[in-house]
Each structure stands twice: as C-alpha cells, then as structure tokens.
Length: 483
Picture 1: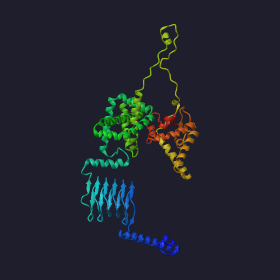
Picture 2 (picture 1 turned 135 degrees about the vertical axis):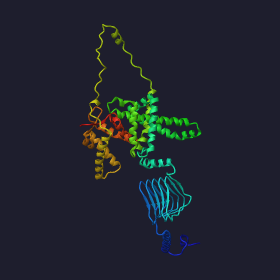
Picture 3 (picture 1 turned 180 degrees about the vertical axis):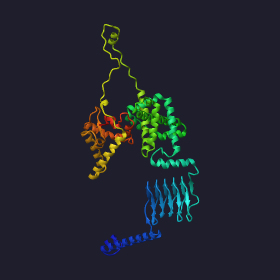
Picture 4 (picture 1 turned 90 degrees about the vertical axis):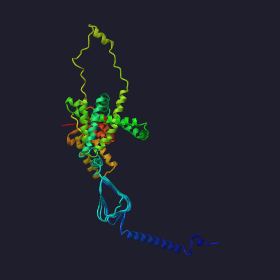
C-alpha cells in the first residue's frame, strides 16, 4: 500500500519542495516560449507583427519592419513596404508594393504599382486600372487586368463610381453620359402624365393632403415587397412572375413621376403666374429640382432613397380614396321650392356673389419662413447647444435631452429659439398666436417622425406651400417672420 505522499504527488519530498519543483518547471516552459518567439522574430528580420489593417476614406501603410495579416482599404491608397501574410484588397485607390504579399491582391478602380523589391506570391486582379511593374519586381504571369482604356463602358462606369457613388450622389455633374438617365426618365414621365392625367392628379392631391399618411403607407408596402422579393425572383426566373415584376417596376416609376410633379407644383405655387401652375410645368420644375439635389453629396442619395415610400404611398392613398363611396348631396328642402314658385312667400336675401367665407386665422399670420433660413436658425441653435454640452461635459442621451428641453422651454416662453430670434422668426400656433407647453412638447416629439425617413420630413418645408414640415402639419404650427 502506497503512503499518502506517494498518492498526492509522484515525487518524494516535502510539500514545499514540490511547489519549488512546479515553479521551476513553469519558468523553464515560459523561457522556452520566449526563446521560440525570439527565434521567430529573428527569422522575420525583427519585424513587428500586427493583425489586419482596415482603412475607409484614408490611406494605409505597412512599414518595412511590419508584418500584418490582411490589408483592406476603401476609398484610399495603400503602400506595402513590409510583409502581408494574407490578402490585400484596395477599392477606389492605388496600391504600391515594395515588400512581400503572400495572399491574393485585388485592386478595384485603381492601379497596382510594383517596385523593384516587390514580391507577390499569388495572383493579382486589377479592375478599372493597370499594373505598372518596375525592373526587379517578381509577379506571377497569370494576373488579370480589366482596364478602362479597353472598354469605354467600363471607363464611364468608373467615372460614375469615383465621382458619384463614392460621394453618395446619383448624379455627378462632370460625368456627361449620366445626364442621359434623367433626360430619359423625364421623357417617360411626360408620356405617363399625358396618358394618365386622372390618376396623376389624384395621386398629387393625396400627397398634398396626407403626406405623412402617404409615406407611412408606402413604407409598409415597400417592406412587404422586400419580404416578397425572393418569391418574385423565383417566379421571374421560372417565367411566371415576370409580368408581376414589370408591373411593380412600372408602378414605382409612375409613383416617382407623381412625386416629381408634386414637388414642382409646390415650388411653382410660390409665384402668382398661372402659367406656372400647370402639371407640365410642375413636372419640368420638379425634375430640375431633383437633379440639383442629386448632385449634392449625401443629400442626393438620401433623397433618391427617401422618396420611394412617398412614391408608392401616394398611389395607394389615391386608390383608397377612389374606392370610397361618394356622398349624395343633400336635397333641397320643400320650403325652398314653394318659396321659389309662390311670389307671396318672402325669399331670403341673396348676395350678388358667392357666400363670403370667414377669415381663417392662418390668413392673419405673417409670412412663412422657408427651409434654408430655418436651417440657418437650427445651425445657430446647434452651436449654442454644443457649447453648453461641452461646458457641462454631456454626451449621448444627455445631449439629446438638453436639445429637447432647450426647444420646448424657449418655444413656450418666448415663442422662438435663440437662433430664430436672431433671424427674426417666431413659432405660431394654429390660431396665429404663440404655442403653449403642450403644443411645444408635441411638436418636439413629432420632429423625430420628420427625421425618421432620412430627414425628408424636414426638407418638406422646401416645397410646401405653407412652408410646413411634417411636425408642423401634425401640430398645426409654422415658422413665420416677425419683421
């Protein structure tokens, strides 16, 4: 039978000696690992190992004494002087190599420049550029190059991607061939407006009367279409759903024509010339306005995406209105007919013209403020709130709460924020007077609804007749000049 010390540890001795032996073994193990790491570093020439390098909108560089796993650069240039153990991908920039790349190299919309000390162990693929190789560079012979010089179509697409897509705008002004796209759509819009005047005017009225409802209905319909898109694709490949796909595309194009005409008509109604209020003029002016917005970075793509729910929602709301049963006008009372036939019955006094309607409170309000000047006032408020938050060291939710409290308190107390008071503006309620705490709070919360569709609810005041944003329409308020 073994003793207790033998059953606990395979070596003889006291427990203190056993702990010393374990510590000695751990030291030897750690020293071996350190020596192995030193040998690996010496084998790599003393290089510093890093993980992947990812850059978006900026340049990347791997120094001579560095070794990284992979390199990915979007909208920027890359320079490899050290060692890359994996792949290198550069999109929208040039790649300059003076070191070693062991993985595949992919350069899209840029050139590959190989220096005299460059070593590429695997294949290189260059799309929309060229390979410039200096003497001494070692590259594989089976590289793939698709240059824009050999394909005019690819060259034009390259210009659009560099000047348009990377700037988040659908219509870059210097790419001439792109202008044929809005011209083609304008002619097609004109054709749809001429053959479908009734549905067009009904959809425009729906957007004018119920813009928020139209957007929400269109957003729900678009989500439903996205969920059904796999089924539509499968049916389209099989040939059974090709007509349904074409029908959906035509409806979306018709809806965008309605949005363009609606924006143009809202803009032309700012002028008193009746000739500008025609649907054809609205379509022309709306197309010009959208082309201007499509040329602005970020805003162009935002407006292009944000108007899709509005385009589909206007059609659906107009169709729902058309399916409602029409109300029967009330019949004339019998006393009116007897009064008309009996000369002894005294008739009610009549005016020479139509009945005068009472003056609405909105007619007593001042001149509305447009989208641009409202943006300037918001910029002033943003600077002030940023200074306050910087002094109080507020971030995240606290910043948002200060922003909301700032607007609610000043709208209720003085009728305008500091930015609005500097420019001579005020917030008017439905009766033309100031707003109370309830209306101010509701308007502040409704502003999140205007921001939900990529800020389209704020931009709505740029073409609305009354210069109202979506949160103004929900609360019956508007921004007006006081001087």
